[in-house]
Image (tube, rainbow, N blue to C red; front, side, top):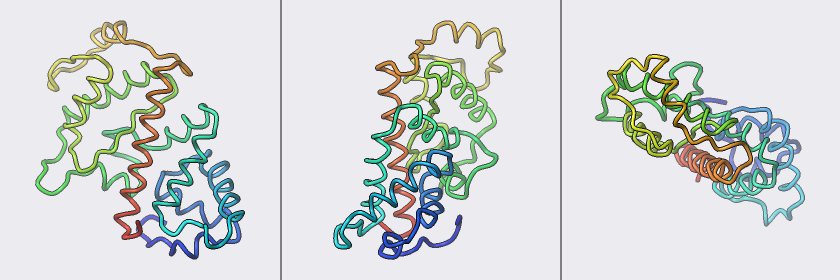
Amino acid sequence: MDGLPPPRIELLVHAPSAASYRPVLEQLLEPSPPLSNLLAPQLHERIAALPAGDRPKSYTQLIDLARDIVSSWDVEDQAAFLAAHPRIGETKGLSQASAGEQAPQQGQQATSPQVLKRLQVLNSLYEDAFPGLRYIIFVNGRSRAEIVPEMESLLGLSLPPPAGNYAEPRLSSIREKLRIAPAGSGPWRTELERGLGDMWAIAKSRAEKWGAK
């Protein structure tokens, strides 16, 4: 339903099946198997069991309820749900919402090829450091270039200037210094929670742009 207004929340929360929830959730959170197979039916079931007066009265409340449901999943499903969002710096295959969020905002310059290459490398290093996770961040109007130092700080790295070509031997030496957080470890779970937190912030920002807080 990219580009279409969302249904009024009072209609959605009385929908007869999970099928009505799916396109709304996909626009807020990006399509994924966990969203279709777990979140949409579980959210519908949870809301249908509530008295009419206790059902969500805003998209913010709906998102908070969805967040509560996802927090009960096992970490493998949570990680797959998180990985539905595109990588920062991706330029192809983006949903309308993601394309708008990653595009230069008013007064910002277009992202340079050097910064896009740097982000590509950082995404690869991040996914080495946190196996099974994807780096998700609530950009909130910032440029892609402004995200670079945040990723580097998280990874404990100081890379060459963006003009560097990141030759494979150089990347190999950087990878050797990465602090790897095995899947399920404390640091890995902390990063999963951070990424999911930003994912929910993105969802609420999208709802606000609908004028449907």
